Length: 192
Image (cartoon, rainbow, N blue to C red; front, side, top):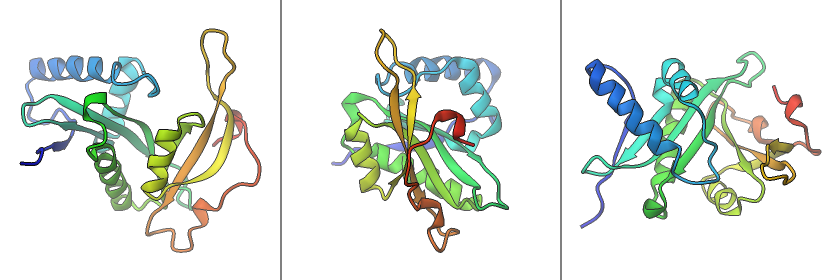
């Protein structure tokens, strides 16, 4: 018998206020402890995403309601310059649920949402040192568009870490212009 997973958008429709507060506290405490490589944000940041892009805030949960993973993102960019795109802000799967296809399914759902919004591509940032994630994204059809120097702030006196800006073209980008790699690295302040 295979594992049954439930993927759903996090929202507050038809949920009483007390239950909503409980869900937020449960979900956000879960998010901040899933893995050390995913950025952890404050509750106001998560609430901002829920308010502005609720369809881009998805969770995977077990049949018993245990949160197994999540993805949060947004839609951004200029349509006129063919830069309208979906952006993956965070993707995390609890260690005990990795290698089950959960991350791939969450990415697929975010891509479908972006496609329905007329996005040209989906992008994400990943630490250069996180080769497990880089390889997973490549298997999902993403490629390195550019390197962003010192994108991730380090702690403990370590140097800042570079990121790859990885992209996957969607059907609206017929000629795949959005994924033509830049020949040189950029700095965080050069990112629009």
